[in-house]
Image 1 (cartoon, rainbow, N blue to C red):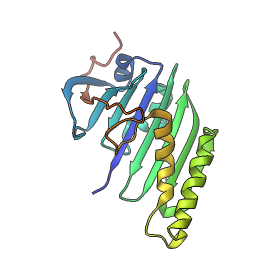
Image 2 (image 1 turned 60 degrees about the vertical axis):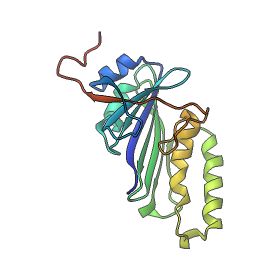
Image 3 (image 1 turned 90 degrees about the vertical axis):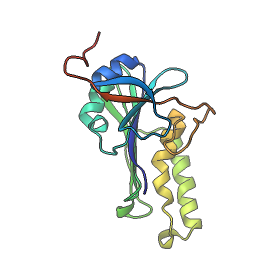
Amino acid sequence: MGYSIAWIAVRGKSKEDILAQLALLDTGAPDEAGECPVLGAALPGGGYLVFFNDMAHPAVQAESMTRLSEGCEALACQVEEHIMASAAFQYRDGAKVWDVAHLSEEGLYHLAVGGTPPPLLATIHDEMRATQDEHGGLEADVDCLFEVPLMLANALSGFRHDEATLLSGETLVFTELVPAAPGKARRH
């Protein structure tokens, strides 16, 4: 079994506002195994991360990301290991800044890039192309470019879905998030 997940790291907006916009409530119940449908964790240095055990969750769709990023910055990542598809994208002040996606079905060297991604993307892309070449290129049994969006999102947020600690060495404490009852998701 592989991952089919998505996450959003939001900086510049309070946890309460993020959860209200996504119509979620924090139960406070810890989830170390990451088995709940939706989880949340405070990021070191400010910000909040919402994790979905659903790669196509409505929160990571364009309309939701546009609203969520108003007045702040939201970085999202999607991972679907069953078909080897990955994406990372950033919205700021209600507009998409950039997106990077790899779809294995489009080829092992496929990488779609939109907007103006960070310069770091070129370095990561070059490294993963070289690694793919070393493993046999198009004849390889591995898909190295799948890692490009994940590595970029990790470099920008410090978080990676399949690693226990952040780049900083800290461990996030996730708690279960549940849908808010009607009327409970409004701002206070």
